[in-house]
Length: 201
Image (tube, rainbow, N blue to C red):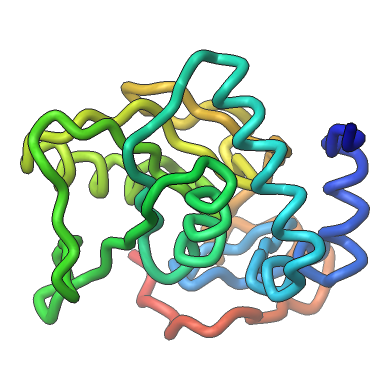
C-alpha cells in the first residue's frame, strides 16, 4: 500500500524543483505577485507526477467519481491530464486555443453527448480558463464531474460550478504595478515563465 501524498510533502517537492517560488514576480498579466508557480518543472519528473496523479485519482474515487474521459487544457494540463487518464484507466485528450484565441478541441479529438469528464489542470489560478474548457465540453453534450489540479492558487475561492480537487491550496497575493508593496520595499521584480507579458490596464 502506497503512502498518501500529503500537501506538506508536495509543497516540499515543488520547492525543491523550483516549481513553487516565493519572492517578487511580474506575472504575464502584468500584475505583481509574491508567489510564482511553474508546475512544468515538477511535471518533468515522472517519479513525482505519477504519485501526484495517483493521489488525485484516489480522491476522485473516494468521492464516487469515475469519468469516461480526462481533458487537460494545453499547455499546463497536458501532462497531468495524461497521468490522470492513466491512473483512472480512461482516454485522455486536451483542448487548445485556435488562431482566434478560442478554446476548442482539435487534432481529431471529440467528446460524445452524455460522456462524463474530469478536467485536469496543473494550477487553477482564477477558475476562468477551467470554466471556459467546461463550456466547450458541455456545449458538445458532455458532463463535467470535477476539476483536479496539483495546486489551487485561489486558496479555495475559485468560482466553479463543479467540485474542485487540489493537492495543495496556495494563497498568492497580487498587486497592480503602481500599488505594489514589494516594489515600495525595494525588492527587485523578476519576470519568470515563458508566456509573453500582456499590457496591464
